[in-house]
Image (cartoon, rainbow, N blue to C red; front, side, top):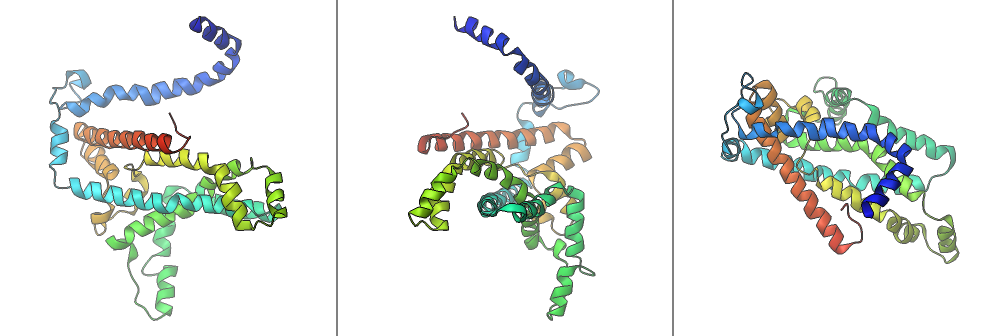
Length: 302
């Protein structure tokens, strides 16, 4: 009976499923289809032999990675940058959305546009801006330091500065765009609640804490769970563009290591094993975060 009713409902709303079909096909082809190639992580892949013809070697690539010289450095750098980005980059869009929500009229739209604009800057241009601003010869930062009586510093070559430059430039670029989701959630707040709170003498801070924050709490939890699912994933594009031989000790992460071993050195099996390890850790963290959220709150992904 359930299958019959489901079939009838699907036929009744077939036009909606038809619009869903392209997205479903896309996910199957570009997300589930490539999973067939994961088996090369357990093989000594040779292009001439193909995936199925390459010899099976089990967990050798994983063992080599775990025992490798760079293993702990990659784990440390990846976790430090990811956790740093999460601790700084996650709450700032929430604060920004709460502030923008209090603005009114044309002034609000202008401020929103200013904060949204950096999101549309390409990664290459962003890194170029960073290099220009912190240039030891003509950078505005070093010019200010020299005017204050300090020596010029080659910031992009300092391992201790790399993480701060990476994280805060990312916050500047994405905080406005990330705040859009919270602003959308705040638009669902009943204005009568704020009006009643004002009549009762509630301050702006009290209205934010007791009305706005509880309204967007489910959104915050969902986005935090999803962020935990990417905790060990750091995109290689920006780091690779900012990376040099002088800051390699703090800039080399799992994604850049996979790129160099897999694409540059054509060691596809080993890089696939490292990438699979990274994704498994992310999946485990996602499940753990979702379980904790489901236990202590009423919000979860599944």
